[in-house]
Length: 61
Image (cartoon, rainbow, N blue to C red; front, side, top):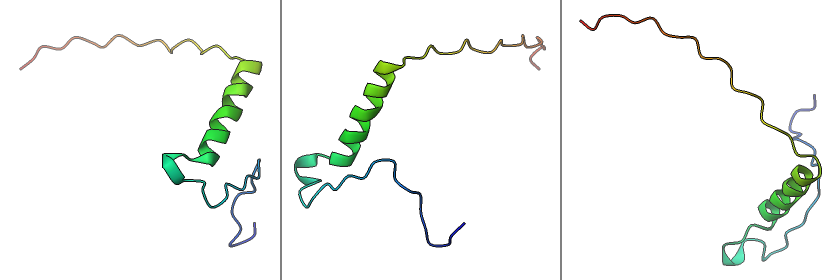
């Protein structure tokens, strides 16, 4: 581990000076598009929910 070194990027993207103008986030938009493409290429089903154990009934005091 090297101190002062963050996480290496998977994708290098230079948003430029107008990256946040007009309420747009170029980096966020790029990542969302990338993830939607990955999901479309390899869709996964959700696992079934775990069983819920019945709770014992207790009288309310």
